[in-house]
Length: 320
Image 1 (cartoon, helix red, strand yellow):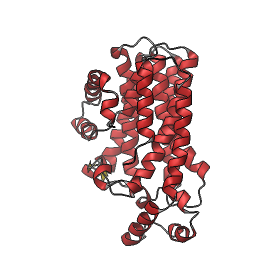
Image 2: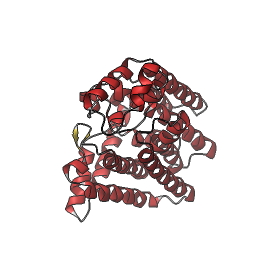
Image 3: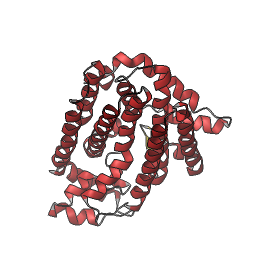
Image 4: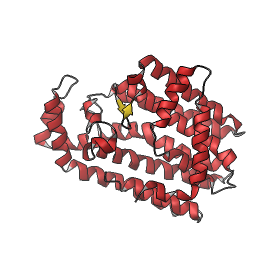
């Protein structure tokens, strides 16, 4: 199933959001505009804007209003990607050179900061203190997630709780906030927008776990970056944590550091790919997916609810 087919009925509104994103990243400084446009044109699924839009349909949907929330959330995501690439010294993002690779770290950091600032500017139209509180808290949590990722590089002594806390901050909260703010922007009742938050949270956890699995099981062409790049950069993800329980792999993984030879890293990545850790990771992702679908069952019916279910199943069952 192609993701585009799932939300084809909102494709015109998605185009409007894409145009708004392009307008919003413009700056009086050409280099900032060029760097932002470079990232935007690298593409992306626009999952967060789609969740904003579908969640807002539980209320009085108006694309002119909703698109500002959608753009705000996507800008936070974009900013975090730019900062992540600096932290990870990543050369590719979706098959194209990262901003830090095309320019340098300084330009990348300023671009990320600019996108964060634009996000806050875009949301000012909402006359709702709760919306501003939620967005501010989300940005703080995303930044904490980035710091945790730096702190835990090559740290094989971390536990499952630490990993889940990190992906909560890195991914899940932003998707949860996308769902909740979309609903708040169309004045959905409190119970519904809170349920949408938890739906988004559980989907976000499943989404990141699947991404971490695909980093081992997919191909460089599909990933747009080298297979196993998370481990190469020292990021200990769920498949690695489960692999540490394997006596044959544990000792080798624990010796990994920034100076580990490339051929050894390649062999470890292949072993993890063939290990039970992959199925164990899928199992945990499925648990989060089922939690999300259980919450969705409690929401009012409508085509937008059906689409949320289809997207949730797509996210939770990706195999490549």
